[in-house]
Length: 158
Ligand SMILES: O=C(O)C[C@@H](Cc1ccccc1)[C@H](O)SCc1ccccc1
Ligand SMILES: [Zn+2]
Image (cartoon, rainbow, N blue to C red; front, side, top):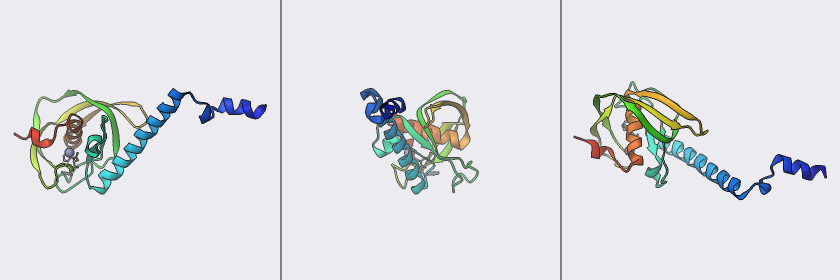
């Protein structure tokens, strides 16, 4: 009898409710998508990528700033998944900077973006994060957030 009691206590996967099972599958899907996006942005030498760019309709993107030709002083950061991201506040002035887009190869343009943004998002572990982003990282965040709303940098060029 012990082994049956043990199985029940351990919550054997087969004993989970349907809702728990569905939740578990969805969670695994998000984790897989995050891993795929991090691999893709690395292979593409990008500094960010949004789920809609790989035809996944969910409010999720990766910010992966690192020094590059146009932004040699860009900080190097661990590629960070940002889920349900939003801008809580921003500086008044916008600064123009060069942008490109993995979905619009070969084109670069000068795009105005807020220099400072206060942002909120859930990380890949579901923890709510609140941060102040500045300069190039703030630019990437705004570029990726636009992708979630179907906006590309060409739409913002003056
Ligand atoms: O298409 C994307 O979302 C990725 C862009 C992100 C980006 C955001 C802001 C400014 C520039 C790019 C790619 O990383 S495009 C490749 C790239 C990398 C560094 C600088 C310019 C373009
Ligand atoms: Zn883009």
